[in-house]
Amino acid sequence: MDDRFRALDAWLRSVLQGAAFRIEPASADASFRRYFRVYAADRTVIAMDAPPERENSRAFVQVAALLREAGLNAPEIFERDLAQGFLLVTDLGTRPYLAALNEGNAAALFGDATSALVRWQAASREGVLPAYDEALLRREVELFPQWYLGRHLGVELSAAQREALEKTFRAILDANLAQPRVYVHRDYMPRNLMVCDPNPGILDFQDAVYGPVSYDVACLFRDAFVSWDEERVLDGTIRYWEKARRAAIPVPADFAQFWRDVEWMGLQRHLKVLGIFARLHYRDGKAGYLEDTPRFVGYVRHAVGRYRELAPLGRLLDEVEGRRAEARYTF
Image (cartoon, rainbow, N blue to C red):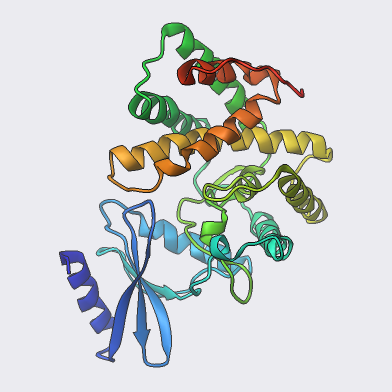
């Protein structure tokens, strides 16, 4: 038992008014938050421990309310102590999409996820959530050269390589910033969606922003921990786009344009995640993330192989990985 766990235990005794309870670890994530399942009387709830000097629990409370106002299944906040960083919230169960998805149920589960995503986006209002602006997008992609190339691969870019990378970053961010904006969950992936009723339960939303409309669907189908074939990704994206069009979400009328937006938005995220996974390993001492970096390198190579404007990034990857360049551009 560490000091924070002892403080959490004392807080629970207070908010549960002396009722008997049992507490077990539920999960942890890439942040400094921890989650515990609390068994009390005839129900279970989740206690969240989020050190206030490191985590913003006010954002969690705010976004949970926005999701619930949109009619979505996000945790209800039963008790809170923001000064200590403790929350007591709904238990959405033990079956994440990541564990449940298979070929037999993927269409139904992804269908529920895209329907929920459209409802979330339809509730969007400017000025409510932080802007996913150029400064934030830029900070994220800079994690790639800093932590993945520099720290993980030990590569110091030449002036020419840095210029080529900057040219690519500029093209990616310009494409991202040209998109219409909506509420963005920012980690809308199977690890953060729970199979429950109503489906899905939505978690890990505290970093939500107001930004590019294609972000969350790109995140959903180009996942950090499981890969799907191109047919599944394309089919799921088309089905989302059709629902979004019917709901007047500001997606392009031409699906080909939207697909390009999804791929370029996904590329920004893939570069960010490569940097984040390296940082989690080397700075934060969190094991298990570097093993998934080849998946994201594959995502990046898939995108740069389709668009000539991204060729400098492809050549850079070839140089740092010692591979022969292969140019097979679709567009």
